[in-house]
Image (cartoon, rainbow, N blue to C red; front, side, top):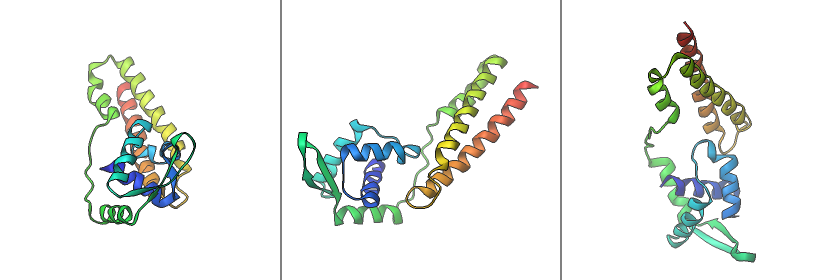
Length: 163
């Protein structure tokens, strides 16, 4: 359901777009909060069209379709945003590696935590450009808070491992 909502939200925010354009938008914005590739996006757009949530506004060369959100799609998006209590699905490889760190030798554990820290630092840089307002800015701020907590955890864990 969340991929569907993410696509409806993108169409509402950016206007009509092709599956390719939506996949690129996903890569450069939503990818920080929800990951989906072309192989997931195209079939979902077809299902959404069949369900009346999007309409094919035009078709171009090589079957390129431009999708637009329908009033029914706008209603579904709005209802989900206003009424849906989000679940916090935990499936986090960083947390799994943190859980399993005691299985490693100290030097190996330090290297793992340094790699995790570097990943958090890179993610922080990537999220900075999305905090200027508009669609995605609150998610970017949430992501930056999470990254900040991750960096603090990494530094604390490294200090403990190096003692």
